[in-house]
Length: 275
Image (cartoon, rainbow, N blue to C red; front, top):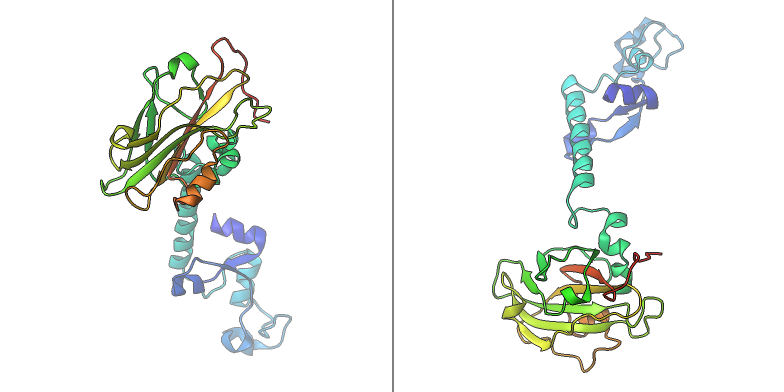
């Protein structure tokens, strides 16, 4: 494969990358100088080394091979490197969501949760939200009758001394076409120890079940890592809550996890428009 690339591009592997520990680079073919070509003593010719016969470097150029300062072992190493890079690319394309997903396929981006509610972030903690009827996955649709009671929320992590804040908001209140109450705060739980769940935290804003009347609403659960215990407090309102401002006020930084579901009135029909 490497030789084919060389033929097509007229480029050759440089051993400098291997010697320095850096990725192997490419450089244009350069014929050997006269001082290094043993055939340069045979007389003047058209080649820069002075040979009127086949110079080793000239032969390499004509055959599409490598310059003769690269060994077979170095060529093999380059081939292995190219194979490794190809495998890494394939793995990145096939990796499960949301850790390795390209941004244009991330459901939080497709559903405009990133943008309307959150800035782009990297998920680092497992978050599981489950209602009695089913677990919440990004974009799943649940009816108001299925989300009357607060869900079970399980938080990952590995240190009980680390605490998290859970926020649940509706960025489409009162209607997706005119969300002048964005965001509406439905639930706020603080001081959730890692490896436990919302039931072990402090519910500072009680759960209010979703009851959308117009259009399809997104209900977003966002998890933040706190700086310490009892460092986050309840806001004085539900309407026009702003998750970004809230996180900045209490130095929460970017989210560590998020998930959302869609909900519309019980008798509603039709899908949510994403444009």
